[in-house]
Amino acid sequence: MLYHLHELGRAWLAPATYWAEASAKMFGDGGSWLSSLPGATRLAAGYELLYRLGKEYEKPAFGIHAVTIDGAEYPVVEREVLRKPFCRLLRFKRFADRADGLAGLRDDPPVLVVAPLSGHHATLLRDTVRTLLRDHKVYVTDWVDARMVPTGEGAFTLDDYVAYIEAFIRHIGAERLHVVSVCQPTVPVLAAVSLMAARGERTPRSLVMMGGPIDTRESPTQVNALATRQPLWWFEANLIHTVPPNYPGRGRRVYPGFLQHMGFVAMNPERHFQSHWDFYQHLVRGDLEDAASHRRFYDEYNAVADLPAEYYLQTVDVVFQRHLLPKGEWHVRGERVDPARIRDTALLTIEGELDDISGQGQTRAAHRLCTGIGEADRAHLTVAGAGHYGIFSGRRWRDQVYPQVREFIARHAAR
Image 1 (cartoon, rainbow, N blue to C red):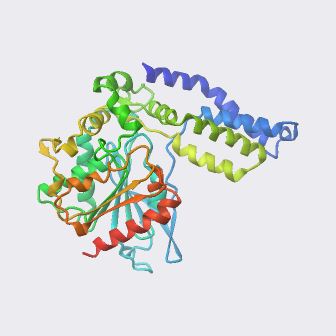
Image 2 (cartoon, one colour):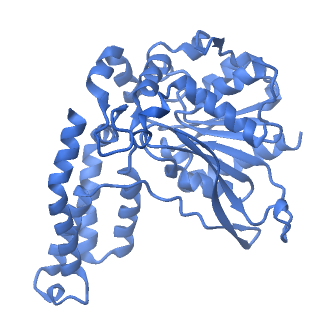
Image 3 (cartoon, one colour):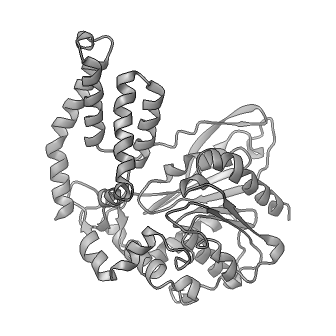
């Protein structure tokens, strides 16, 4: 019922939102006579702020169309190479790869970037992908908003997530592949590779795990505390709702994106209030570059996806409440997940010193579990001064983290 009320409220607000958008243009466009009225700049700024607070945010595009390699710019095309009901496997095809027969004849190692299925879209890793493209062939998991998946496709669980990762690794080819997992997927990725190793299958050359909840008993954060404060039934009773009839997934049980977004904002309400006030001031002063930066950030931050209820609840239970992976008690479809079975895959873990989502030690715990990997094939990096997003996006990622990721992958690609 809450989801239905939310959609009804959004429909009621739509006319006011459209009116605010139109008013912002009328008072802010230099070609409009209204822009010459006294106070027009402040009116335009206020209307745009109202519009952005009330509008619906759609999934952004990756928008990666070119990459610079060795001083030369090459086109990049985004291609869907495999589709499953809840995820699309994308390839960012560089026209500098050897298979294209073009100048450059590059044969860089393939990298699978496993994006989080935890609210925001895979485009949150745009900077990660763009940077990796300089030296790698890049694939990305693009998770589908659960409200867009018809109920006829069935449920999606954490076990299904693990199976998807296995399928993607096999599709690309494990013999040369390197896998980069960011935040939430470190757990299912480690499970997938563990199960493949236990069956005697080829496993990726390396795993790069960044800011993930391998063992949330280490340095628990506010996010971890929320997941353990209430019993599992509370999450199902209060956070799980049914998709309304105006979406393809009508009737599907989900953890709605709008509730997740409320939780994100509630973690730092003062910062978001100040950010919106600064945006208004930038518009009034004509600081167009700063205003554009605000739009880019919130176009991404405010775009959230519904999560399948079964997947969300199983994640809370397995990862955050019972800690089955680090305890060695996790079974996926009857097979025990044993990271000690991994032997032919190198492991790099990365944590942010100031990460308030996955605390220090949570990702590094993977080394304690992967006892079959030799010491020469392990490494850990703690990024000084970096929060959660700083380890995979922004200047710290590009200048401090990526050079070490690139070197680690290159070293193990040459084996």
